[in-house]
Amino acid sequence: MMRKPTVARESPGGTRSAARPRRRTFLAGMSALAGASMFGLPALAQKTRPEKEALKFGFIKLTDMVPLAIAYEKKFFEDEGLFVTLEAQANWKVLLDRVIDGQLDGAHMLAGQPLGATIGVGTKSPVVTAFSMDLNGNGITVSNEVWKEMRKHLPMAGGKPVHPIKAEALKKVVDGFKAAGRQFKMGMVFTLSTHNYELRYWLASGGIHPGYYTASDVTGQANADVLISVTPPPQMPATLEAGTIHGYCVGEPWNQQAVAKGIGVPVITDYEIWRNNPEKVFGVTKGWAEKYPNTHVAVVKALIRAGKWLDASAANRIEAVKIISRPNYVGASVEVIGNSMTGTYEYEKGDKRPLPDFNVFFRHHATYPFYSDAIWYLTQMRRWGQIPEARPDAWYFDVAKQVYLPGVYLQAARALIVEGKAAEADFPMKTDGFRGVQGGFIDGITFDAKKPNDYLGKFKIGLKGNQTPK
Image 1 (cartoon, helix red, strand yellow):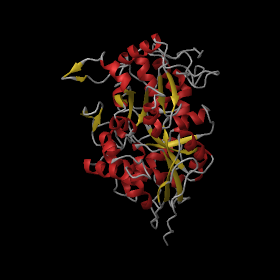
Image 2 (cartoon, helix red, strand yellow; image 1 turned 180 degrees about the horizontal axis):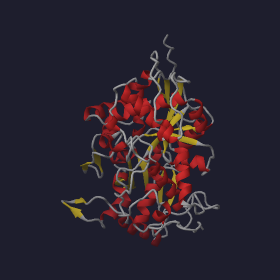
Image 3 (tube, rainbow, N blue to C red; image 1 turned 60 degrees about the horizontal axis):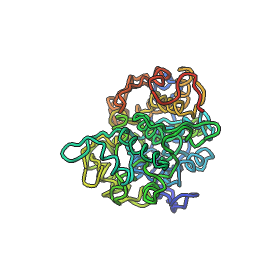
Image 4 (cartoon, helix red, strand yellow; image 1 turned 90 degrees about the horizontal axis):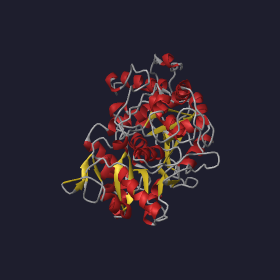
């Protein structure tokens, strides 16, 4: 018998939940899936009904929460016998804390959050992920005042700036601020966020020191040329407009909102900083994953289907834009969300350019939890002092394998193949968990996840070897 839908509730410090939960009668009986043992995980039991059916998931109001919305709206969760509530959270810290203390079963997370929580950067509690939600999706926006000065130092073609825009142009502005006795301030969404590391990466590539995290400076501003601080994503445009910060790095639609309001200009996307970089993940606690293994696989199945649906056609993207424009999801206009999510990106007002891979939800094996993705984040934590002491390469591998669970992902993938909902070619079935040597970085440096310390040694700015932050 179908359970009555619950009424959306106010989340502590957040907004009303995204949608009333739904449920279908679950059709059990799928045979056990083989192959998980190769990852040190048990195969699915014969009885595959979820151990826990009523679930509450959290998210932040960003376009890349969309796999959760689509899994809900297209009834992919229902197909797995899951009775799901989606609930917007006030900020990333609140979201993580509520997953750890069990108020949420899981959440749309920054890729650095499960890693940071597991090794004790900030809150220490083991959190894991078996699903990467997307690639790319962020941008760096500066105020009109800053853009006016940056523009003077940029190469032009046809009256428009040549992209990608490198941070050397911003350095001239930062140097001008220093000469005038002014501090240059920028915002990002959380200390463990992709945005923090991407912003730092871009700044450092242009010779701008973004600062170190130290025992006495947990803000990460030690030795900084630019003072970086935390601002929740939806508040970024207003904070910029108020003059509190001079720029920010955030996910969409909050860069496009600056364009729409005429208060700032997105100067570069993360696709241009690191082509096809891993962005958000779906995270749960280690204890939850161990207690509800079938439920975990069922959730991943639904999310894989959502990612696949999102990348299947332009029509699907347009429909998704309309869905998440609702106030209980992202709550921005269709026009603002569509500016970045439907294959284009608007920099200056009227300067809209093709950028088909700005949001990727399934292609390029976007949903697979690669160990190499985890290792890149760990190298950036080390580079900027969140990991204050040198670690051997083996440590990076061990942490990645504690947190990223490709075995769970492959159980879900195999189930979808058996059910005819996906093809084997959709998944990297034979991968060792590493993407191989990766390029596509704005500074031309390549990343080999099997040699993390060698990678750190390539940077002019940042900790390496036995260096410690001061």
